[in-house]
View (tube, rainbow, N blue to C red):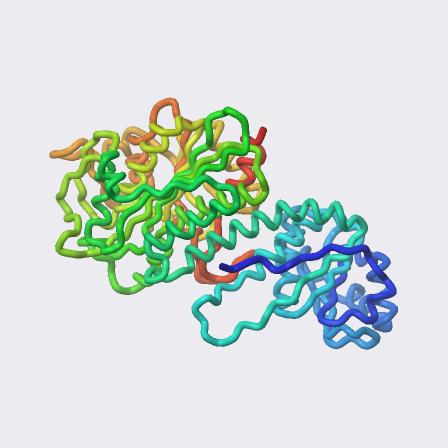
Length: 488
């Protein structure tokens, strides 16, 4: 399991700066003003910092970015990063600065002189998130990562603020690790075992096996896994940190590998389908974060774990299955399996927990990538209040999200000749008809959001806060939603 780098906080010690080994960083305002640590480093380096901030190069450095001075004279440090940052930065700029520091730091020890800069906890979070590396399956020895120390004016306060931020980082890392794992490692059993292990941090965890799902009537979910040797499961994680209020329910699609089933996917790019459990990964990461920071809210996370494989026993196009709700579904395409998993788990969540709201997450459709690319997740909702609250939380955390439409005309595209509905509505508006399918399993009184994260769960190039691969998108936004709207 990947853990965030250690970040310590200490009082600023100007007299120690000359002897600090490893790497050193200072912060300078956009207009070039130096704080006491900056002035001391400038003096020790014979005005090198002043020459930098007075040059044209400094004008080209963006807020939150830095410029490296290599092997500076007068310091024991091997290099100095001069970071451009306002004394009262935005959250985004503070995290960008942290990301720049993480790339500068590498495996070496780092000392950051933050002085009186605010939002140092956000700097620490950005540093932790960008320093993530998934190396579990590399045989070369990975260098041990030294700690980072942030010198600031109020280290005790900063440490307390950073505690919650690092809990978020741990949740994001848990999600990234799950999404990055190959399918021969992260089987449905292994996934369930990793979630069950979170009992140690205070979560109540229950694993429903196939015999339990059969009794509940989850034939839609079970049909997806019929061609796999891995048993289908539903894992329920409860965090009861609030009062007697009804919980918020988070539901995740956990297809540990998706071949498309009998409607087989093309070979090119199929290796990426190890990430088709991304929705379940995000739900798991959020639940871990809530437990680690002791959230004062009631939240239940439910994930449906299956594997979609072609086999003599596999579900066929043209089959009809009955959901837990009792509705019948004509399976037109076995590669539209995520909605078949989610619909049963969503119905179960409402029947058992009577939630105050429900949010499902899934790497559901390639169509959402065509529409929104990799910058935004698709947001569908039956309730403006919960949707607006989520969009506000996502914006505050810098996680792209865009609301998409729902409507009867789209729903009509799911009509079936032989069953209550089809599992696909055709090529047009594929993401919307998928959301319309799920809405059929949302009770009228349940405020609901569907998040299609196919474009944001895993990416091919680095982002500001993550290396290429799994991003952990959604953990921060959902934690913020709970923090702002559900904590007592």
